[in-house]
Length: 164
Image (tube, rainbow, N blue to C red; front, side, top):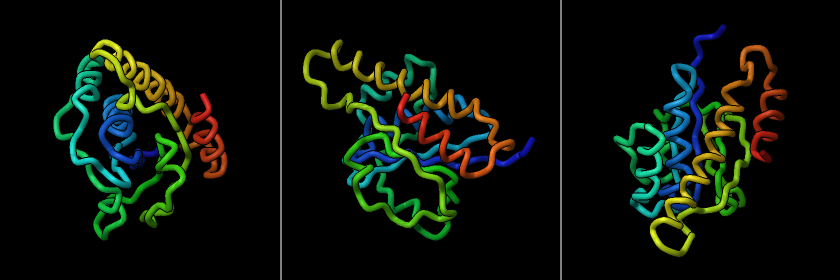
């Protein structure tokens, strides 16, 4: 088994909800095999408090999250990325920076929980639904035998996970 740590970037437009949830979940579940980051094409500058509350409910540490631009990950000295996942449809349609390391990319779109209108209970439910979907996809990815699959097979599998 390889000791390689796979760097994963989750991208969304605002980097305040979905990509933050995915970053937290993968860092929590991925152990020493994965290191997750998140960024936005047009970050809104703040992390949605419902995202942090949802992660806390799932017993995922919430320290250090910030809304940041995806350009940070295309700069010299940025982590070499193995995977880039878009988690919103808007970001999937944008022209992405050139990522160091030629990472595998896939679209794992989920509805935006921050767009849900209603009371706090409705919003909290939307965030939890999004987190559960992302958690299931991350668990499926973690179950892949990364060392036993060639690059094209891994790419095919992670793209397929985004449809579940």
